[in-house]
Image (cartoon, rainbow, N blue to C red; front, side, top):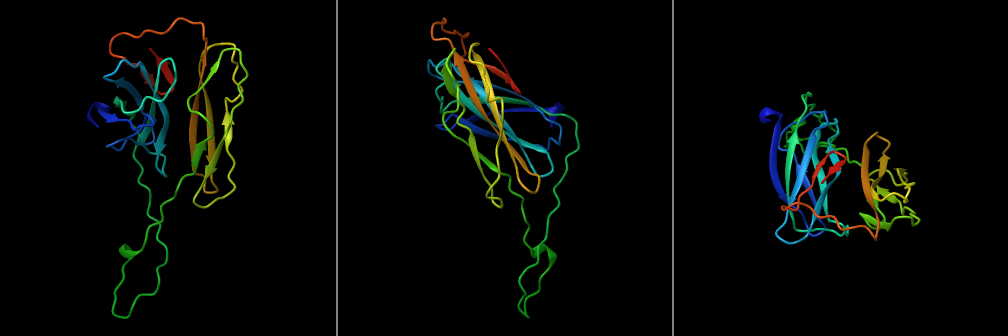
Length: 221
């Protein structure tokens, strides 16, 4: 990683989502990520970091982003996201391979440990119910629709939600964070963006370039 940082660009899909895969070993220190959006239309677009992606050993290997229009909150698909990643100086840990017994080999076939399959641990997958982002008028009642989880080994994992009790009297952007942990200790998280808006407020006008900067969980226009 040159100067502990690198940059690049990626196209979002029709759902406004993209996964930035780190080309370098960043280790277990959470990197700082800044993203901006470039769009050739008149849309005002804000990029949001959904979650960081880690491997079995806690190394940061990527980040997922999502774009939405300002101030409507609608999905802004097919946009170009520019990113800048600043890594932290932590050792990269390589996950050890786990060998499992194989079926008996033929008499004329020679086997080695290299031919044995490797078991790769899978993390739980969290699915958010309802709209994400969700938009509600200031002063109205917000009832979170929650989320559910699927896992390759466990069928009855629960989902923990934090931040679901949103005070809607103050316009702004809020987040409900869901997490789930399987029996092997693998934890996944997902985040719903809740936009509380004042329908009588003046529209937000950004400078030319239609860009916003996000560093981890903070948004600045």
